[in-house]
Length: 392
Image: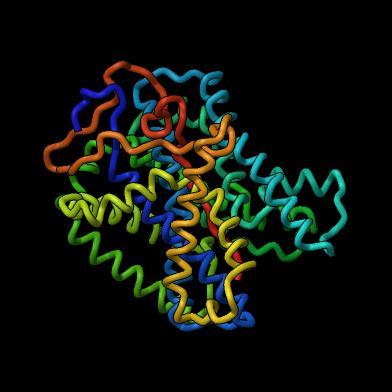
């Protein structure tokens, strides 16, 4: 894409984010069927649930990409960065955390007593509701980002960071906490602890650093990536059928997620000529942060109103569509409220058009500004839509 516009639009990023958003929505809707059917899995819904588990780590990759991409060779203002993230991430994180925590207390009178220590634990780690823990992880990475941005300024530095972060991530994912004190075990095994996810953020940043080369290679390597990703899916099916259901935190994802992320980006280049397929996914990707925040509320409403017959697995596709469109409508309604940018930030799609990887050389904004290219549109927008559910 040319640099003629003041801010470059990367449709393949919206596309991958849309796919990841649909994957995580699948995890949560299938989990609802699991609980509503006596915690017994339907074989097909279990398959969808397990394949959907790739969505959350892919969101971490996208978060890393969209943090580093705008600052390649550009100045960085810590004050401006902090102000932007306080409005676009921290504010929604706290407001929705309060809303969901209140809803949880209202629907669960037997919940543990509220203490100052519990409140700190709940809101710092995103435990106010099952999907908010990832926002805590993203905020932790924001705190580390200025330091990394200063240090990771060469190809050698990025490759070193990729190897080191992969080692750290692998160690935390395979950690045996036996013999540790209770508080140390709780910390090291905490779902919302950045070291268990750090590799995906760094991989996303590495993609941003090498984006010009990678975006050209995606065309040549598309067939190979698709074949490898099909192999990943087959291995994932074998893995859960052999060892039982898994969460998004597993060692094999350190290989699976880079392959699937690159494949998703490459597939956009092939599918971009089929606008009827691509545009709905792009739209979901552009609304992803909002869908992430509100979709549990929609699922809660479905739980309260859906007749018992609706929890028959045969009705899953209809309920999945209902949750998706209900979430989109709720996001669009919230966007019209005064001060909605403190509740959610959703960038509109601008300039979306067919992408030809072979002829496009991405460039930074022509005006030299260091705003997040995709995050900021009319002082709105955000790039982060990471979410998942550890259970069942």
